[in-house]
Length: 617
Image 1: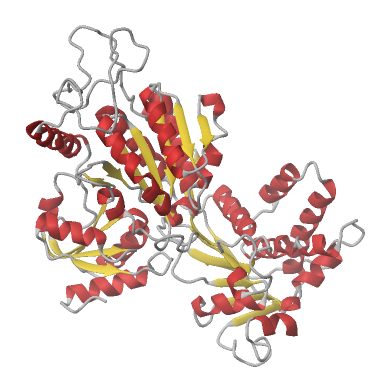
Image 2: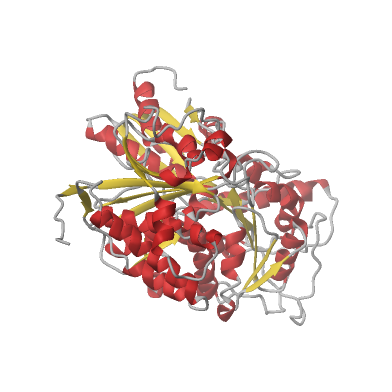
């Protein structure tokens, strides 16, 4: 057969969404495409979207699993507002996602799955592939299941096993369409299934069959090329937020000389951190799966008392259960890092969906005045830096620190420039060993941290517990003036951290019409929106908070430099409430709580409304 030479179109950025049943391997498919694009050198951002249920009914709308990735030849900050290409493996995936595909977008569907039974499950009265309802899209109906099954002829596999490999057929087709090598995925298959050679052979054949279909079919009249991005020199890897978090903690442990003890109870989307840390035993990491959240944080506090780096991780419901113990850590003034990977909704909520609504909970969700430091990463890669920072603050100030990530950061991925070990700062922290002049609640005059005297140190015996402490001596005290003094000291210790963290920086004009202020995973959408508005000549700046308690010391000055302040949040205005209360600034709150990240266009529209003095809603 003569080789076909199709025209190649150069593109700057492409966004693909793979969607199918939760058993179709869409997360794996998206992850493999992401890895290959990363190896090629593209900038990447991803958005996995999967159901919380272990197995929703096959072919149903609740069972739809999706993975969106955006890859580019330029610097990008988000996984894209809308897909350019939607790969729908069944009618449910089509129905759940077609609303996000813009007119003219490419739609690749597994034609074999559009059976009367599957159509009926999701309420299609007619087959949308035939009734004209998809006429605004460029539709490519492909019998993926049957073509894939044919490519696996001769292998001793059940029909169910054969069907499970069709995601690799779709992946191979997309590799051909966007000129990506199959080699990284073939190596992964060989390694992943080396103990199951038949499965490895099936997946490899399916991948190659999808690629060959693209190469030989007359269906596609062009294919596309997205050049590598011009990233700063260095060694990169693709990384998710939870992976970066675990590595940041391990790095901080090595730089401080403190072994990690991580006590945790599994909960989505924080569980990965427990899994990942358990793989770093060779770095002295000890992990403990406790019977519940209260036991988990109790064990972590005990580990800190014994001189280790005590850590615990959870999501919002777990923070509620840990709240009393966080107060205990405040009272005993021991270093402790508490990870909150936020998810959507109160109670069990929507475990796999995104939200950033635990801010007020971690700041104030305890009895009495119980101040703790709070940090929040902005991107998946930034999770490494802020995990390291959380440990630095906890050890330096002998205090609990809340590390506030979220579901989008936890599972999203991007290229990450691996830092050199030498570039990471040392975290100097010493145990008290000197008997002379020892008092358990004496304080460092600069940090107000009390000495860390671990049990078994001769002459430094002392008591700890949740009852109020007498200043300096640490004895139990009910003295009214002492209690007032200790409350002020604990507050002053946290407030003083502001002198030890970077000042807030501004992207764009240093004063002007509008400042968009954000925190957490809204970074990419806000930064992209600010870039678009600046490109049109608008006086719009962006500042992003990574320290939420205390705030950077120059935040008030920055807020005063702009005519209006817009605060987009995936909650109902929690940071806006704090800014208004602290700085008496009439900040405009813009909130969306749909379990999804902001779209860039949403923030652009809200900013334009704010600039014009219109109501932002």
